Length: 224
Image 1 (cartoon, one colour):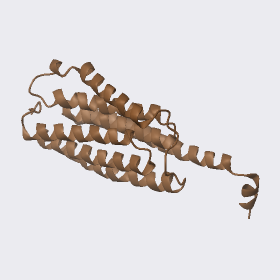
Image 2: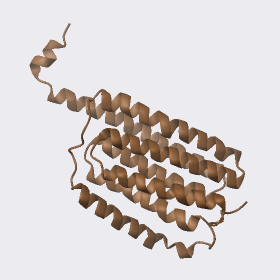
Image 3: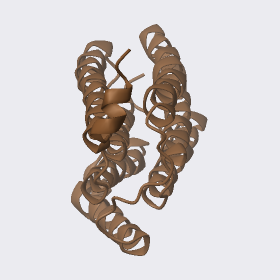
């Protein structure tokens, strides 16, 4: 099977998955709570794993089934749980106040970027009847929204979530355009490694900030 028909059951499901992933990116952009950042990213990854499973069914690809399961386990459960435990709880992060613009401005900008994504990708240039004609603009919009989150949020954890949203957007576009496994694996491994490095940097940065704000008396009290 070389393509996904837009009118097929798989095509409709992928379209709906792309819309949900985009809406969850907007939800993350419009929130100020760290817990919601993580929750929205986790929900987005679960929907993405469903989209990968639909693509695996449509292409008859065992490799994509494996990838769908790994996406659900790592992105849908592993990364959100690790982020909550290692970053949010240990650093007592609750409300994100380090935002360069207001939420309304961010959402309006996000809407403009979504329209821009549809203009740039120009779905009419893609082969007619393929689900990629609808999903590629959606995935491009998700990538732009993730980048916007990284720009308007100044906190390391929020920027990390923005990067992970960008990764989900790339993955969504890949599974609708590419039926071969190696390309997706190479791109996914690279971005996952980069995300892991960012998680470590965020954790170290948070600890450094906490120590920098501690008083000399508090530091002396840590001595045995």
